[in-house]
Structure formats: structure tokens, C-alpha cells
Amino acid sequence: SADAVKQLNGLAPLVLAHRGTTGYLPEHTLGGYELAVKMGADYIEPDLQLTKDGVLVAMHDDTLTRTTNVQQLFPGRSNYAVSEFTLAEVKSLTVKPVGTASTSYPGFTPVSADPFKIPTFQEVIDLAKSQSALVGREVGIYPEAKQADPVMEDKILQTLIANGYTGADKVFIQSFSIDTIKSIADKQKALGLDFDLVVLSSSSNALVTYGLANIAQFADGVGVSITGAGIGEAFIDLAHAAGLLVHGYTFNRQGTLADPEYQRFFNWGMDGVFSNYTDLAVAARNAF
Ligand code: G3P
Ligand code: CA
Image 1 (cartoon, rainbow, N blue to C red):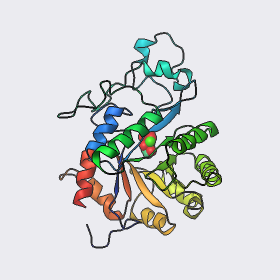
Image 2 (cartoon, protein in one colour):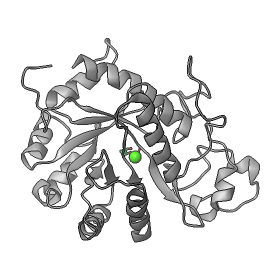
Image 3 (cartoon, helix red, strand yellow):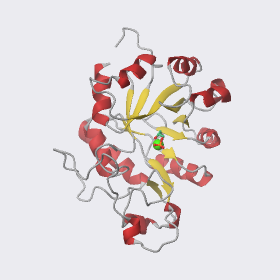
């Protein structure tokens, strides 16, 4: 890296395991998260949805169809929304490999005998804590509120509190909803908590239009699409000038020596990268 890195904290960029190790194993599963930690992820990312009986589970989509065998196990249901299934029903499903993912990874034996079920948020936290003890460093968590729902906000905060997190730990809370992040900021202040909050957007330009200084009133960073409008060194400079970290999504196979995509963003000062290929992101970061 250059002698003076442009990252806001002067630290090397963070590797954020996007939904697990999504390029290799079924997304949002304990097996996927465990492999991400073994590959050196700094944080594991669960997107969060609520079941019918009000339990936070790690899942990207509003519906269960793309990533699970729900249609085989529950044929004839008219609605496959996560919110229409109880936790017990959700737990009966298996997460399928999608895209370049598979059901195994060479040399990796998951600690769980059944590693590709849909985990609860609590189980993701348990894995982060048990893996932290195993690897001798704190594995961070980066939960995303997928619904702009005050009940979800409360459950995320209460789950973090129940697990001893205060904000002095490696926790980021993220949402595409600015109102959700604002609301969490207010709630956590009232509770004496100080989690790092991140506003997501597919468009860096939209965040500039909203006002980066305004966002910095209630958030610690922004998470932006690396292919979206306005992403570049100038945007990262502006965000840093407002005191905001910049994390980028979603990195894939870039980071190989033949395609030094990660380095371009690192050189611009990007503070963290959501990657589907934790090993490639870690290699790129270590080469920075
Ligand atoms: O949360 C950052 C990134 O994961 C946003 O995209 O759709 O994968 O949640 P998505
Ligand atoms: Ca996400």
C-alpha cells in the first residue's frame, strides 16, 4: 500500500463476508459463515427477516423460494414469504447452493453436522462467538434490517444486548432505509448503546444529494454499490470529509492478480468490502 493509506481510520480495509462465503457455499448458512471466518473474514454479514412467529432469521430475500427447497416441502402454499412461515417450518428447510456455490468446499469440514439450514440471528451470533474463541480474534457481525419495521429494529437491538454487545464491540448495523437507521440511532442512544450504523444505497450520488453531513448526524458510515452511480475516489473523499466510513458491495472474483479490482477501491480509500469470495478479498487486502 501507499505509505499514507486513504482509509478513514488509517487502517487496512475490512473484509466483510457477504451473506457468508456466497461464492462457494449456500448463502446465509452457518457452514458459509464458518468458512468465511476460516478464510479470514473480519465480519460476517447476516441479512435479517422475521418469521411468522417473530424470530429474526438470516435471509436475504423476502421469500423462501430462491434459496431453499420450500416449494418441494410445502407444495401448494400460495405465499412463500418468510413472514408466512413459523420458525419450526423455516427450520425444516435446507438452503440450496445458488450461482457458483456448492454444498462442499475442498478441505473444509463444518463443525455442524447439518450446516445448511436457515440460522436464527442468535445462531449467527453464537457462531461468531464460538469461532472468535477458536481463531483467537473477535469475529465481527454486520446485521442488516431487511424490513423498515420498528419491531425488527427492537429485536435486533434486544438480541445484541442479550448477547452482551454494547457498541464497544465489532458490530455494524446496516439498512437501505434511512428512517430505520435514524430510528435505531435514537433508540440505541436512549439505551446507552453505541453501535456503528451504516446507511446503504445503490447510488453514491443519491447519498450526496441527501447530504453526507446530514447522514453523519446519525450514522458512522455508508455502504454503496461498487457499480452504482457516483462511486469513485471523489465520493469516498467527500464521505471521509464528512466523517463517514465507506464500505462497498458486492465484490466477486475481482482481486485475482489478473484483475486487481479490489486494489482500485482500496487505493481510493474504501474502508471495507462486502465480498462473496472471502479468500480473494483477504488476499487482496493482505497485498494492500
Ligand atoms: O448490505 C450490503 C449488501 O449486502 C447490500 O446488498 O442486497 O446483498 O443485501 P444485498
Ligand atoms: Ca446485505
